[in-house]
Length: 356
Ligand code: CA
Image (cartoon, rainbow, N blue to C red):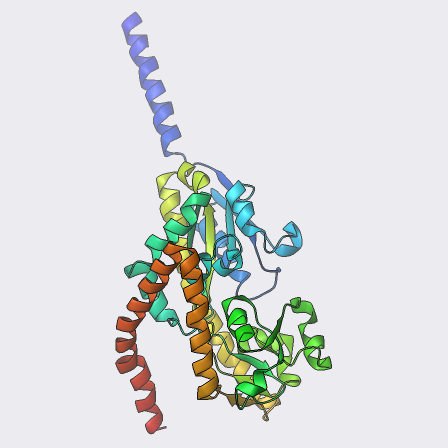
C-alpha cells in the first residue's frame, strides 16, 4: 500500500510537470520605435509585428509598442535596447553612425545596391554575417526591418544645371550624402522635420531630401518646390529591428522562431506597402501640381558626387579596417548582382516601355 501511494504521488507529479512544460509561457516585452504614432508605413511595421506575434502565440507573447511621443527619445533606441530598458527597437541603422560608422553601411549607401540587390546580399551574401559582427559588441541582434526602396534625390527650388549651382546652396540632407554634398560646396544644414516646410517656403533652405512621394506628400514640399530630383544617395534605405540579445536568449525556442519569422514577414510587407503608397502619392502630386519637373542631376554633378562618395568612404575605411572590409564586400557583390539586374529588371522595363 505504501509503495502504491508512492507510485501514485510520482505519477501525479509527472502529470503536473508535463502540463507545466506544455503550458505556453507568458512573455511581455516592450519595443521602442523612432517614429511618431502615425507615420505610416514606418510606425505601422512594429505594430503589425506585435499583432502577428500575439496571434501566433495564442495571446502569450505580447510586445507593447511605444512611439516617440511616449518614450521621448527617437534617436535613443540603440541605447534603450542595449541597456535592456526595452527588449526591442524599430529604427534605422544609419542613425547610429555616431556610435559606429559601420552601422550606416547596413541601411544604404550612395550609388549602392537597390532593394532587391541589398536583400540578396544581406540574406544570401555576407550581409547578415557583418550585421552580427557590428552589433555583437553591444549585445544587440539586428535584422532588416522594412525598406523604402529608392529614395528621391529631393526637392529643389531651382534647377541644378552644373556644379556651380551647388555652391552655397542651403540644403537639408543628412548622413553620408550630406558629407558628399558638403564636399561639393553645399551648405548642409540639419533642420527638425516639423520645420522643414516653412524653411523651404521662406527660403531659409533652397533644397531638401526626405524620402519619396509616399512620405513627402504629407509634408507638402511639392506645393512650394518645383524640381523633384531622382535618387542617387539612398537607393535602398532599410529600416531595422533590434533585439536585446540576453532577452532573446531567454525566450523559449518556439518564440524565437515566431519572432524571427514575424520580423521577416512584416519587413517584407513594409516594402510592398511603401511601394503602393508611393505610386498613389505620385499620381496625386502630378494631378494637383502638373508643373512638378522630375530631373536627374547632370552627369558632371553625378560624377563629382561619385568621386566625393569614394573619398568619404575611403576615409572611413582608413579609420576602421572592418568598415573597409564590409564596404569592399558590398561593392564586389554589387558588381556581380548588377549584371543580372541589368539584363533582367532594367532591360525588361526598357523593353516593355517600347510598346507602351
Ligand atoms: Ca532620406
